[in-house]
Length: 207
Image 1 (cartoon, one colour):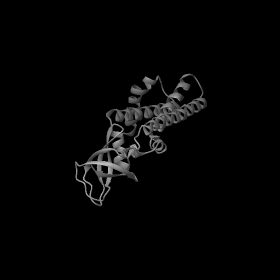
Image 2 (cartoon, rainbow, N blue to C red):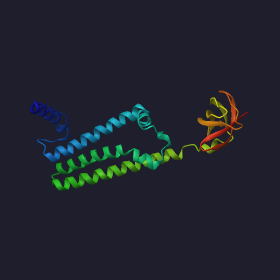
Image 3 (cartoon, one colour):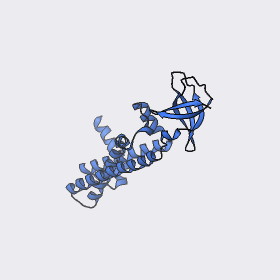
Image 4 (cartoon, one colour):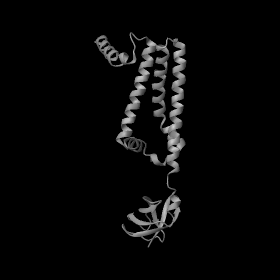
């Protein structure tokens, strides 16, 4: 039974993958490179599909880890995105190694070249994400800019409880946690103005 399953799997791989990569009777090393390239490429397509669907990736991180992805800095985000680095390494390690083998290079050279291309792609991917996350961080509105901004109460503020307000900051309506300046309750829908910001919380008063 196990032998039959193995033959079926190898037949499918031979038809779907090895023919596409131009491999005939692949050696063990070619199988390793091909598997690495296929796994890395498959993970890349899966990740790309999630990104194209929109918002799923962030929702997964938020739901599993309980974190706000938008609030993570560039260094922390780079660490959280090592998945992309791993799939880049696998894909380019396999492709680089196969290229050398197809060019009649030796096994040792293929492993070295595969490792170098995989490592370079992993570093490049990390730097690319770090760059884009840095751009995103640069474009994030500083909460201190909300001082003197006007808006409305979105979630009622109690005498001792934190509520939420929506204020116009940088031409965009944003929602922030808020407390009452004079320790009185403010109902939903009431117009307010931001007096100050304390520990990431807006201190607001009625207008």
